[in-house]
Length: 268
Image (cartoon, rainbow, N blue to C red; front, side):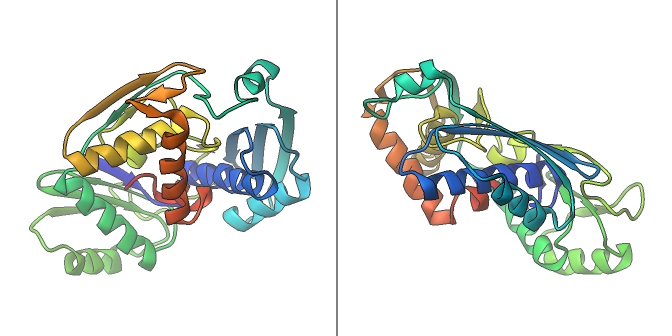
């Protein structure tokens, strides 16, 4: 059983805004140190950034407008990264935080719901969330006619699932209905994998990003559960230099098109 939300869900909108800000930081600096928190909803986007690089507020507002497709008020706070955290990274790339991480191979159901959610998003690019069990598919899709959606889903499914569409009726969705916050949909991003922190809105020195990606990829490659932990300042994890873990994660982020694109669907 697994839930998946699409990129227009308010929580994913917040993740995407955070990812776009991290993308800008990497455009401005080779290895920036940045952490972004976004709370968005009902016409207001509140964004707090701790960063080693200054980002013009005008660019933040452009990101919010582009991703939300709304004229939203933006409350932007930017502060330097904590001096002690900065010192930890001053001479080499080392683990930027404490954490626990569990990478788990994806099941066929998890792969299936990801495929279905992405196909649905091509047809209905609005707020949506979905649950897949062994015999049931629950579809909560905004801005869609239920009859048309039912016909589309019956054509889409290869297997015999009971299809349940919008149990409360047709709805509009989006940030005017619900608020969104960064890293609030980790189940949708990671399936059964487990983390002590969120994937989004952080640079690659943060274990929440790099070690999570590394553990997930290793689990898919080996077909086995991967469990890791680290402490701030560690220079080796799983027998590898931390800088190597970061490079594996960097290549993965680049392969999906950057931090904003990574935030759209998470790890699967």
